[in-house]
Picture (tube, rainbow, N blue to C red):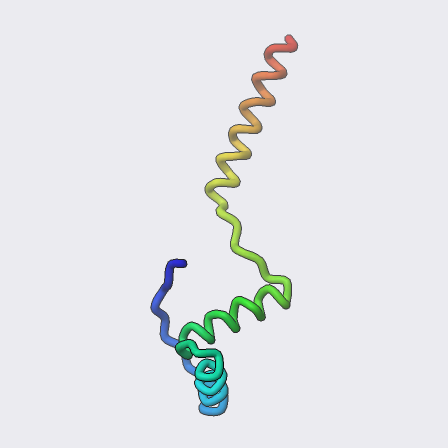
Length: 74
């Protein structure tokens, strides 16, 4: 999975919890926070951001196919 380097600000207690939980899980705090963020996003119903370029291309292709079908019908 690709990673992106970001800077976060956490209160001291949150950082301490993250460090302890990460150590117990045998992973880095960064990996643990990434996993926790993903889990929370899924839990609250947030999904991946759609690729609007691909959606637009699919819409264009569908429109072209519909226009072609209408032309073929006369």
